[in-house]
Length: 380
Image 1 (cartoon, one colour):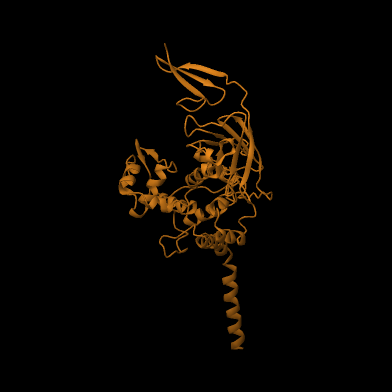
Image 2 (spheres, one colour; image 1 turned 90 degrees about the vertical axis):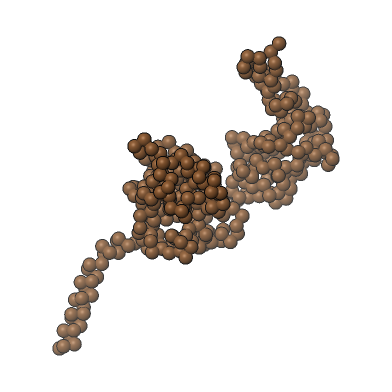
């Protein structure tokens, strides 16, 4: 009988505990999910806790502005660059803020880097420009930081959460408001990994780059499922000469702007002769609006131009990369690109620049000191 009473009492205790637990589970489920997300980000080298020992015990704590910037510096890969800033560079970047002294020592470099690169703008309070480094960051402000890192312009921070949530591939909660906990921020960062940046590439794909180990981890976590993938091989469809100073190259895929506008991926030879190689100058390559067409302007020296009525040689190097991550299987060599420049340049406009200077713009590059589509002449 005593055993029965003991069993009944124990059973009643268990029932009372279980009936009181649903509210507790409801409160902690998000934390558990964010624990897992934090661990996943940490495994990929994209997150650390308050210190290098790493801990998820503080995910329920408020997230300060300065710590939110550290979160993003780690996620987007500029943490090392920020910490490499000199003391003078940090001081210069923070000089405009009236509350710069309130920034914790461990966060000064990252906050300075963020200010210098237009990630952090500050806010006006009582006529002073402040950072609010130790203030709890709001969801709207954190989403604004995220959008700027993704290449978007934010005109109204009040709708930044909604805009981040609506970005293609995003899994960010559009209803998130108010001050953030550290766990909330982890949720936002994780949810934005599959979101598409302004470049057309997802955040996670851009982070991975050529890192095979990181790619395996992302695939295992299912983070690449929504990444735009172009199964076609990258191919140079055509190479043609627009005039003696410009070459047009067309690819079969949208190209990665940073890769395609780098001069290291091209070799151009006048008359197809190896000794006639033409060096490319700064800003000589531009990606067209269709993101598949490249225009190369021979602008290293004024005399750089292809010989009319000849055949030039153009090489596109195999490591050039498309938005999808595809690369050329091998160097694309076009050794018989016909040069035919029979069109006479026409004047697009003429305008006065000062009292004694006229600027004349032509329909194509002209061979003068400015080395572009225009020349300057003194008034007689």
